[in-house]
Length: 519
Image 1 (tube, rainbow, N blue to C red):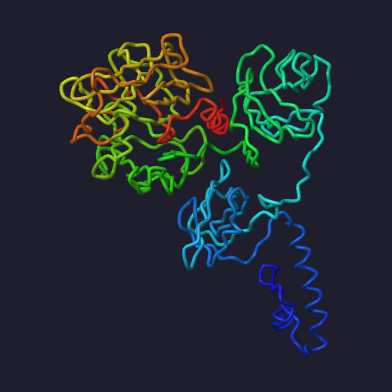
Image 2 (cartoon, helix red, strand yellow):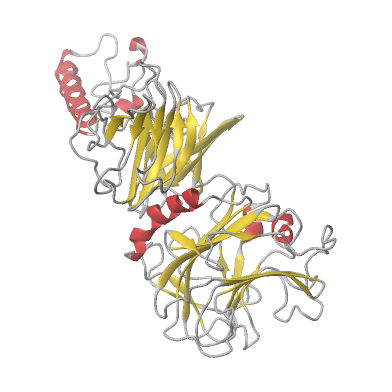
């Protein structure tokens, strides 16, 4: 008999010939056949009960999206888990990030779980039986421990013992989430605090020593936090709406492009293009506007970085290996508005890099990892640069520079060197109207002994900077021997956002990705 996915919820419609149905006036000999098949199909469904195949036929669009016929936006709601099956074969799991209907189809965009992938042999999809809204999960689950990388269990909020994790503040009468004694969370632990609003008190969240993040939850409010092992960072501001917590996802709001050597949808192991996996960039540009060529163009040449690792394996081994004059250049004919904004007044962006440093940093090699200007901008260039050996000596200090018509308008260098032959997540978040900061492996990468730096691009009328150097598109690496990524520098992935992310938001990316690199 056919499986439940082909059955109708109208009884009279289940009238196909035995053993797949029960037609009117069916032969007595078919009754027992159909009944046995009915029992088998029911058993198969219950053995796989957490997923339900509605019989939808998905049409592959990309490694992060598919379409189904009809308006099924209610079924494929944001935040719901789905199982995806292909004939390659593969079975992968994902979380829905959007579902939009445009006659005659619903387009479903999803984020696959870490280590999973989807290709064009996609043939079946089954949503989880747990929906995002009005689900059957209990409101609280008791536990005696805080499980690592998970949402924490409920805790009694009426204990006045000062040695307890949650206690009543005797001076204010408010309920305090404090950190007496040993800090109780591990690196990457995610948990929420919900003030149920039953007693009229305000919940205060923070470490007992006053360090880290402090926030206030009024009646009914809920907030989500992440730990870096020593202090707390907020993942979302207190809200009275439901919150979604996922420990294996990255921050996706304002994501413009993502390039990942370990994602088969970004690079399949062959070819001349490192593809952007963000289907709908946050700046409304086309997905392919952020594809990068191996080399100066999509033709094979001596300036192409070599791919290492196994295509689609999403491990620490997948990278593009740069040596001497190897580069990657934007495939598009010119920079997007977002790329042109990086060096301009009121710029707001975040660039995140995952890389493994070479075995040594040679003297006078500035290691231009990303730039929108020429390698010698002091003559006439306009644009920005990310360097990983900004001092130019044998010690590698990450740096950020902006030029306007040959004038340097900002020059920021980290206080701390990068170690040789070491994997890092390094990022820079800039709000040109305020402050910026550098980030390294779960912590601030300090500049002049401070967590943040003044990000204002120069002074004295820098209000209408020129467009970038017309002949220079966004580029990874550089052909100039003084600036080239050299000695087999490995670049694993890049993410770019058109807003200045907070440290807590970068902590999400760090916590979700570091395991891939054994960090």
